[in-house]
Length: 318
Image 1 (cartoon, rainbow, N blue to C red):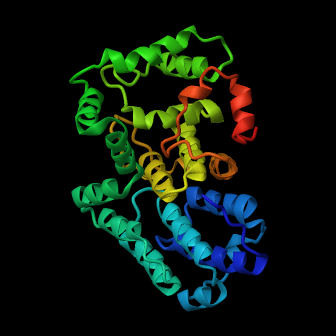
Image 2 (tube, one colour; image 1 turned 90 degrees about the horizontal axis):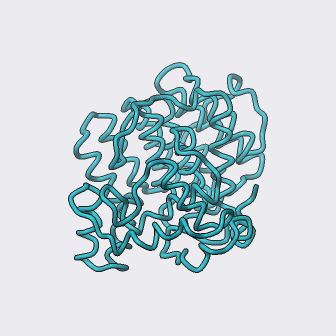
């Protein structure tokens, strides 16, 4: 993701629009307020009094925000904002819809969140998942291991089968010296009680990049850590990065679990002081990387290298 920092005058217009999204349900909820303040600090580089900001029409925003990539970024940010305090009411997505239309941004996730807001949960899940990074992962698994291998991997995720030949190289990473990327990856799996690819309930190999992102970034696997690693992944992804942000916001902020695993029911996690800022810093940190780990990245040649060396090589900033 190329994270754009707009000039001050355009940033102010966007912030006014973001406030309108945040306030659409009524008063600005604490998670939404924290996200607005974090956006000012990390992305917009402004310090406006949120309560003093006047509303803005979609036409006024469109007149002042002309760069197509920036328009897309702001619509994505509005979608993230709509999930800050739980499942959004339909009138909140209506606000996003009007701004997106004026900006000329056709974002399919606006339609998906309309489905969610109207409690068409099954249709929402089906449409969201087919557009998400999970669908990208399945496609990559097919490209790398064929249809039969993908079916076996998905059955393994459900605990129905295991493939010791796939798991063996991951198990062997425990023999690497401490301080290497591979040993850190091994210890991440075993320390958290996660099965390797090929073991029962293990994720397909095309999804190993998620755990490598944990190891390289240093973010934990609790809900706060998953929110940050999701933002970090969105930062380094070149294709469909907003899907990952929406994925973690749905699961850990709106209380809608779209992962294939059981998760705690959490709403409004960004009410936690400082967490919104950490999430956006993780997004910016990921955007500085020089490789997209999710796009067929061959990690095997790097596993024997020192972890800090790999971080430097791919510009994983402290």
